[in-house]
Image (cartoon, rainbow, N blue to C red; front, side, top):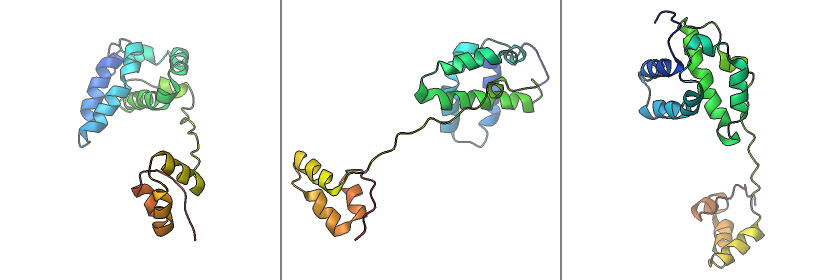
Length: 155
């Protein structure tokens, strides 16, 4: 492609995904296309050269995304203009000029104690079966019991 002021973000995404998809899993391209849906709704009709000048608007838009989606969606929006820069269609990636795209902080999961496992097992009608499994098999038993407990037992 040659530098063209009328290549819209929407058109470029289609071209980029066609090239980027070569040798990649279809699910990778499907995920990237899905993540680009929101940016395309907001900026898809803009020519790339105009998008390059929209750093404040992109930042404001990104700040309004739901926290659970923000990192992945902004990451996709950062990836696509990177290709436009490499392909010499724009000089700068406006999504990167906005600033960092930190991953959301995940809540820590507190593992259950053996007493909590016993109470849960009783509530579920297992009458302490999970604890007996724990005492017999220790770490692997919890996964098989379906309790998803992330505690490393020693003994």
